[in-house]
Structures are given as structure tokens and as C-alpha cells.
Length: 432
Ligand code: ACO
Image: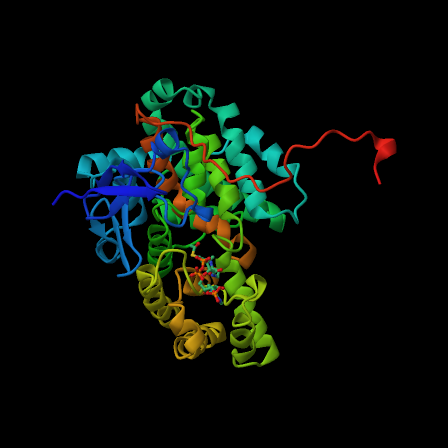
């Protein structure tokens, strides 16, 4: 069925094209409205705006559906791992055995962060935010790989495979370096023979003369955590990547901007905020009712962290998967984490509360992901950097879509100006 749309302003009608996506999502194309009618579309926060066409991820927030390149997140979580899902997200297809091997090799060969870059890290106070350090290090990558970062789409697309591998592999190494720098520990070089997640755990937790010994359950949980974060449609940080990319910025610069956007507590920073909340409930011996009551006040700073989502109006499918994995990991490792019990109790209490029911607020991926990371041994202040490792493939795939779109425009939204109207300059001695 073909759809038609028109907008009537006063007594004049303006026909508008309708775009329908492959999953039936419909959009009214308002691009010509300013030229034809002198109006722009107003949508503060872009909550109802399709800013691009994308083939990477399909998300239906009402039904709790998340698919990468057509594959349901539940199936990927059950059968795939982070590296394979990264390939899928970036290249659009599950890799053949040969492609998987070649991709894995590229990641292994690009894991080392240049020694000179350590100096960037050492310029930071050890108390600095790990996300600030990560974003700065990624922003510095073009200086160390000028051949991969030309700020020219034609040139950058030719070296894309290499740049993508550098980004994924080095972001992981940088996170381990930041952790060790803050703890005053010597950096551990990556080991070529180790798979992606084990290599990360080695760089984090090995000690001089005492290598980290891989624990399969931990590797599996880390793989799942990263895979569940691989992409999530046009969220705040991915849109930021696209926006920066739209000015023909190279991959690394665009990702660095995305990492900065991810740092905020309403986005990637929520996983750390959830742990702080659970820890305070634990320390105060409260049952969580104080946090629930405060969350209902409507104040942004008192929100129940790990609850609600800008697009899911039903459950977040990632939260379901990670919630189950949490229990499994803890029981396999024999860990009795009181914060898991508090989280489960809080979830039950919130899901029975009219405030949360009527607003369709459910746990999101961040609600349980902190407990998994805590069991792996990641400190809370590093949580959001873990999210950044996981989200790298999504940033890369979205950058690629922008870079390879010959009809793409620079992102440049309009605004409705509501400030003072024209007024003459007043000299300083005449100002009241
Ligand atoms: N606790 C209490 N109230 C909430 C919460 C919450 N966590 N989330 C939303 N609300 C309220 C809003 O205040 C609003 O109330 P109102 O109708 O009385 O004004 C109502 O629920 C609807 O809000 P939404 O439109 O659903 O929220 P929005 O899209 O603006 O924000 C967001 C989404 C930022 C994720 C929000 O739910 C939130 O702040 N959650 C807590 C932080 C968090 O967990 N962030 C992680 C998101 S997932 C991710 O980035 C990976």
C-alpha cells in the first residue's frame, strides 16, 4: 500500500512524501517544508525524528524488539560472541570462517597502543574520569595513524577495514591501560595469541610474573556484556558519531565525540549510577523504598537509575538477557552479591508501583550490567568505559553509513529562536 501525506497550514495544503522502512516504519518526509511553506519541523530532542536511513539495527521500543542486521539480539546472545557480532554490525553479514579468521587477525595485530601515547595518559591526574581519558586517547589516534584518518571520505573508506580494527582493538587496550594507570600498576602488553576478551582480562588483571588465568564463565559473561552493547540504533552517542562524521571527520575523531556523549549519567554513565544507588541502599540498610519514593518526585536527579528508556516502552530485551546472565555468573563463581538481591527486590517493587507502570518504565540494560562487571572485577568508575568497548562496532558501522552515502548532507538542524528581538548596542557607561 502506498501512503500519502499532506500538511494543511491555514488554508493551504502541502503534500509531503512518505517513506516506509523495511520493517514497516513510516515517516513523513518534511525536508521540503521550509522551501515550500516556510516552516520547519519542531521536535525538541529529536524524539520523533528519523535523522537518517540505516541498515544496521532495527529497534521496536513498543514490542521490545532489537535486531542487528535482521538477527534478533536473543539469538546473537545465545550463539554468537562479541567479535563475530562486531563483524556483523560493521559489515552487514555474519562472517564466513575465513572472514572471521581474517577479522580476528586484524584485531590481534592492532591491539598495541603506541608507547608514545602513554604520555597522554600520564598527563592526566590519576583521579581523572576514565571516560575523559578514553575520549582524549581516541581523539589522539589520528595523530598516530594519519594514513587512516584523512578527513576525506574517499580516502578514509579505502582504509576502513584497518581503521575499524584499530578502533575496536585499541579502545579495549586503552581501557585496560586507564585502569592500570589509575591503580599505579605497570601496563601489560596485549598477547597476540589470546582471544579478544581474554586478552582484555589479561591486560587488566595480569601481574608481573603472574599471568591472569582465564576463567571460562568470566570470559563468557564479558563477551555477552560487550555483545549486548554492540549497537543500539540512533541513541545519543551514536547520533553524535553520525553528526561529527557528517562534516567528513575521520572515524577516530567521530568515535571520540561519541565516547564523550556516552559519558553522561542519563546515557552510558547510568551503569555506574545504578551501582552507586544499590550500594547506598545496602549501606543504609534501606529496602529501596526511599529511592522509589524520591524517583516519583519527578526530579531528574532523583530518577531510579537503570529504569526507563527513551525508546523502549516495553521491556528492554537486553535487560532480560543480562538479568538472567547475572544470576548464572554469580552462582557459577559462587559469589553471593547482596547488591543482586537488592536489585531484584527493587525491580519487583518498582514494577508493582503505579508511577512506573503508568509511565511504562522497565529496567534497562544498565540495571543488571554493573553486577556482572563487579563479579568480573571491574571497578565502578570503569563501567562506562566498558560500555564504550562494546559500542565501538555500532559507532563504526554508523560512521561507515555516513561516509559511504554519496547523497549525505552535513547534519545541521534548525531551531526556533526565542531570544531577544533586534535591539541597539548599549555603551557600557549607559547600562543600568
Ligand atoms: N525514574 C523515575 N522517573 C522516570 C524515570 C526514572 N528512571 N525515567 C523516566 N521517568 C519519568 C519522567 O520523569 C517522565 O515523567 P512525567 O511523565 O511525569 O514527566 C516519564 O517517566 C516519561 O519519561 P520518558 O519520556 O520515558 O523519559 P525520557 O525519554 O525523557 O528519558 C531516560 C529516558 C533518560 C533513559 C530516563 O528514563 C532516565 O533518566 N532513566 C534513568 C537513567 C538511565 O537508566 N539511563 C540509561 C538509559 S539506557 C542507555 O543509555 C544504555
